[in-house]
Amino acid sequence: MKAFVVALTLFAVLAAQLAVAETPEEKGLAIAVEKDRRDNGFGDFTAEMTMVLRNRHGQESRREMRNKTLEVLDDGDKSLVIFDRPRDVKGTALLNITHKTGLDDQWLFLPALRRVKRISSANKSGSFMGSEFAYEDITSEEVEKYTYKWLRDEAFAGQECFVSERFPTYKNSGYTRQVVWIDKAEYRILKIDYYDRKNSLLKTVLHKEHKKYLDQYWYPDEMFMENRQTGKSTRLSWKKYNFRQGLTDGDFNKNSLKRVR
Image (cartoon, rainbow, N blue to C red):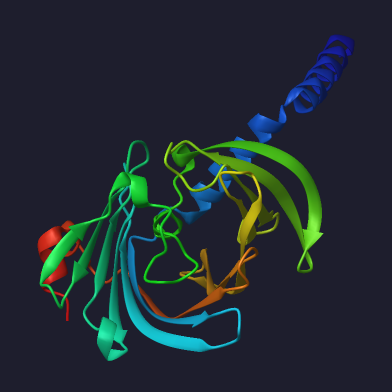
């Protein structure tokens, strides 16, 4: 019995030492892996989106879009964004094919030209359709796309959060780093600060009004991206999520861009 107690004590000491020995990098990665695990298994979904662009003088323009997303188990997810309104952008569509490693593939269909344009790897930091979201902001957030470092725990928006840095592995990223707030209870992203290539704060996005779907998956009703250097902002609102609609790879290729309605 004494030997058993001694063994338990040694095990407890070793466990405590291992917990202390976890580096900020290891903890940051573990948080990202757990978030990714909780997001897996949704299959596919469709949703409607409203984008409101606001300039520094308070003038606004509005766009109506649709989204289709397909989960890919061994790689990054695929998505298709289709613009319905206003008339001057109607039929414009963006296809995202995200990869866990290597460069993502993105194509933009311009209906006025009946042309599919590839977004070059050097232009992922460019503005998506005049918004404060860059092309690289609207691909799926695969764990392998970043390295990580836990910074601290703190409260944000009434939630206890992990605060971690993540550093893009993509060499042409417009960001040196991002600081991410993830709530401890459900591993939902609540806020991201984006730092530009000069390591100055460029943008902040807030994810708001999360709702739970399929008794497991949390998605925000709103993403509010503010450019901290220009005063411009973009509010992206989501509604009418429908999951497991039977989408396939055939819905996400360059030919599908020309068939969008």
